[in-house]
Amino acid sequence: MSADDPTRTTLGIAGVGAYVPRLYLPASAYREAWDNGGAPGVDRVAVADADEDTLTMATEAGRRALRAAGVDAGDIDHLALATTTPPNDEEEIAVRLASLLGVDPSVPTRQFGGSTRAGAVALAATVEATQNVGDGASSPRLVVVTDSPRGAPESDEAAGAGAGATALVLAEDGPLVVDAVGEFGDPAPGTRFRGFGSAETESIGVTQYERDAYTRAVAGAVEALGIDTTELNPDAVALTAPDGKLPYRAANALDVEPARIAAGTVVSRTGDAGAAGPILGLASALDSAGDAGADESGGRSPATSVLLVGYGGGAGATALALSTEATDTNAAASSVVPVEAVLDGDVELSYAEALRRRGTITGGEPAGGGAYVSVPTWKRTIPQRHRLVAGECAECGALSFPPEGACPDCGSLAGYDDVTLPGTGTVEAATAIGQGGAPPEFVEQQQRAGSFPVAVVAFDGPGGEGGETDERTVSAPAQVVHSPAGTPAIGDRVEAVPRRIYEQEGVVRYGFKVVPAEARRE
Image (cartoon, rainbow, N blue to C red; front, side, top):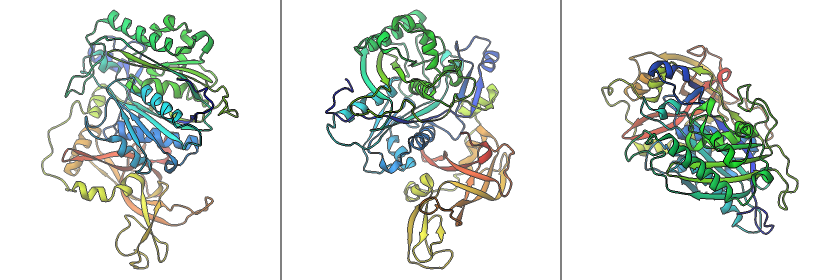
């Protein structure tokens, strides 16, 4: 497949968002606990918090990508989501992601999984679908890849298991275009798999067999591009990376320098991010902010050409050649792709704390049923919980959250117009829920993450046209996450973030919590 046909619509990557949880486990903690070497080439692994999962991480990455590209979620006309570790084995989580982001319900969604090359497949499929549209303008599309693999505690897979998400906005003015896609598959059972009903990734552990399968599939997909790698001359090579050594095994087969692989590899900082791994590598390679001195490439300019290969155990691979070279449909392309990424954690965990956060060790089931909220009742408030949709009184303009009943200011029953709050606000009151004090539906969270603050927040109004200051506020309760000082003080500024609220009747309820502005990572 080529982007050179002038009769086809070609979208390029116009913005990238990446999110890695702020909690991390040093590799040394795993080695100390199990008295073995752990995952080679991995210095730390990202650990999702007790109220994070692949959907909340996808939302974080998606919002960052939309901001980076300057695109409103309402303008997206196609959403693709890829993950091997969805919150549920069977459920349309792409639809939930669309709701959390504010994508229109009529927009087509596609969900990819079953293999760690799912992210590369999702990107390739989205590009191909765009090229098949033919002449005419095409609205932006969004591809989100998120993963959080796990393994048995004593396994090599667990030693390297990380987490993260990346989102790519594709638009007609996107600087980075996909020049070609190559596919390769050759059966190699046992290289990486997860049995039916299991949450733990495993392999048969035959090292040379797995290396050969990886190298053969990756090299085969790149050969299928029909482009000589010396001609392509990529600034960075982003490969699926279950550890920090396997990607470099492909250097000779691909005829690329190890430094090019380092430029597109973040596994030493994140651990094995599964399907998200090579897309996180792409984000790092494109990030002109340098994203801290931890970059594995040792400092470099943003990449203008990238070779991306997603590999899946079994074994198959999908390769994409990307570059910022101008095309007939993208002649004015800039070489810089906007990136908003947080790739490094800043809160270190002990090994026991990491096991608790992951839910590997918790207490017993809580007594009592908690505050029962039926799923239909919860659904009626999804716009408020997912996107902070408030009501503006049709009579006096006062805000109400949630928008129901009489206006709290004028008492009018004239109804409300929907307005979306920006998610920033000020703490009006706060306290902490200590151990043993949580309602039953939050006991598991407390067992995994400890006591947590809660606050009443005066959320800022939506603002006027042109960014005018809006003096209106509307108050709502919220849990506080990652508060450096513990319980926040009255007057502290906070910002809403997507999180799991609790699980009831087997259904995970998602909504917003708040993080102190001083702790918000940019």
